[in-house]
Image (cartoon, rainbow, N blue to C red; front, top):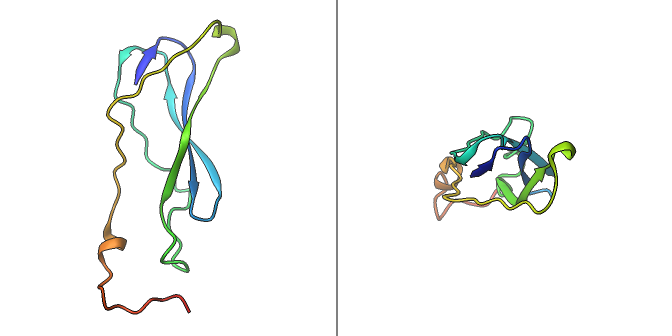
Length: 104
């Protein structure tokens, strides 16, 4: 992320498999130049429910910058590079092809 040394805040907008929307705060953009920004998904955002083994994960819906009104004037551009999502694929890999579906 390229910061413009402003107190604006970057947020990721996500939704789960049930359509529940949430936002994850990445942090303030009060730096100049490129910076690696990372965040863990909070435990308050549900990614897995053992009742629904076929519905898991999150979908990134977009990004939002909450601007500080005292520091906002003119156009504001932001640049992202090298976006990554690190995940645990255990649930995906633990099923065999001939396993029966648990969807009764």
